[in-house]
Image 1 (cartoon, helix red, strand yellow):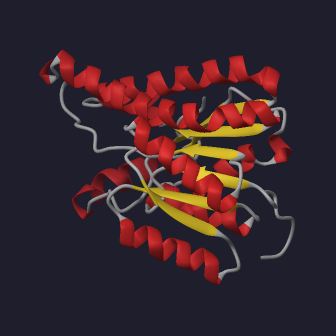
Image 2 (cartoon, rainbow, N blue to C red):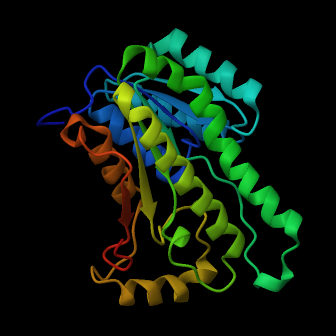
Image 3 (cartoon, rainbow, N blue to C red):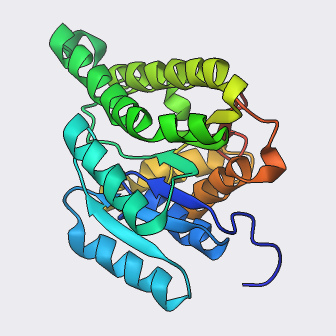
Length: 253
């Protein structure tokens, strides 16, 4: 890679990094000089292949299996990453789960409650394990991958939209409270992104969204990774509490 390496000497932990947006982010951050902790839960082979790819390109990466909704597993993951790579400077909260989409009246309250709780567990346990070190060093960056659905709902998206709205509020609170320690927290909000999770059967829907998007295409994981790099670098040192849509202009703010 030519040009400036924006994260030279940094250590990043990315949750849910074996595929899709997480994997694209790991590749990009590594190319910009970061040593990368690749969290996975079920996709061990993909995580190892990604780490090998980063190493072959001259970077440093370690894979760590952990359920991000288990505080004990997350704490152990952070200890392993820091023992191997050093103190974590950048925490990327990307791990998600399969969300049920259904008409609003079909959801039981427990469905909504559990979806929101799982979303916040996936963020809070990692924050609890990583951020005290950032506070002690008085420098760090948290980037959470939310969704444009947190502000722009569609039919059937109630549980997903509520969970991501809760995540948005959580990250804004961190930005408010951690700023005094020079720790930043920001939100990257992808629109429809073409990943392994998009089935061939949904092509008509993805084509429809692309036609409605000012940039006339759907997002790819690399588009989201670029936005994460942008807010994680020192070029955005005075950006905190921001919500940045990555939707080609379809969702503006």
